[in-house]
Image (cartoon, rainbow, N blue to C red; front, side, top):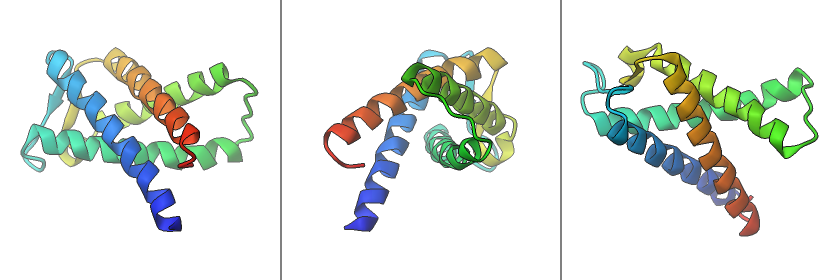
Length: 133
């Protein structure tokens, strides 16, 4: 039961990130590139990038707590994690041989960071309401 309670939210966040990254790659083809010699298909690159993004975001939470950054409002937390998502996306795009993911300009990382952060926030609210977390 405990494994399911931890694993299910992780999988749900991964799927939400995948859908958002897939939509970004579909609608903004000039801004994003998917696939490389090591990650041959675009869908595989999107899934791998979504997985690495959620791992980096999960790793950022204890780092933020360790630095003792405390935000008392939801808006400030949202802005903080928008930055975390944007930086994580930019980092993932800088290693396309590993991820199969690339971006044309840094502002695409900021926009995709906003979209993934919004998706993660909505997902968190749904998971809280259903007592999954």
